[in-house]
Amino acid sequence: MRSFVARRALAAAAGVLLALGAAGAFAEQQATQQQPAAQQPAPQQVAATNEAEISIQSFQFVPAILTVKAGTAVTWINRDEEPHNVVSPDRVFRSKAIDGGEKFTTVFDKPGTYNYICAVHPHMRGKIVVE
Image (tube, rainbow, N blue to C red; front, side, top):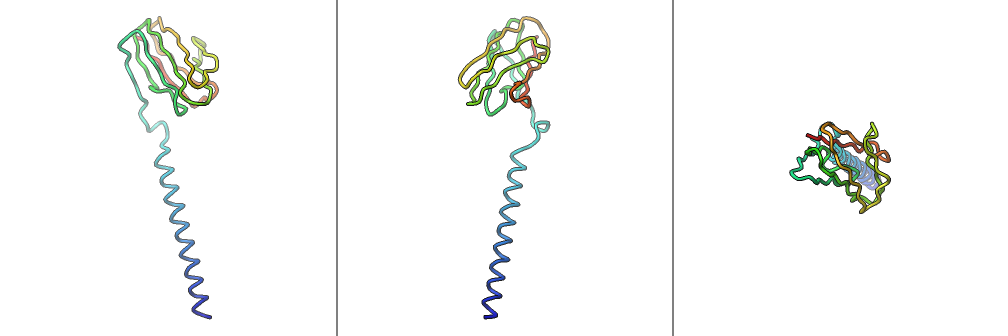
């Protein structure tokens, strides 16, 4: 009887240690996958033509920074299932809701830097640099 109780206690302790180890490994994996945005370099692209495209995917603008020549038409394509929009804080441009598979296009005629966000999901940010 005594050895049965001892084996049962040992098995319970081993189960707790396994559960704690699995929880620690899961937490470490999550921390590795979710690095703060400040540590990840923003994807950047330079458009060589008078048309450029930005993908909206996985709740991000890709590329996050786009450099274009004045007169370039920039098109955002929503590849998410959720609706998004594209809004510059100074209201230079503003889209309506862009559903999955839909597009929004605007032409950038004047040189400058144009920041924008998705007003539905304000953590989504991007920038257009017009040369």
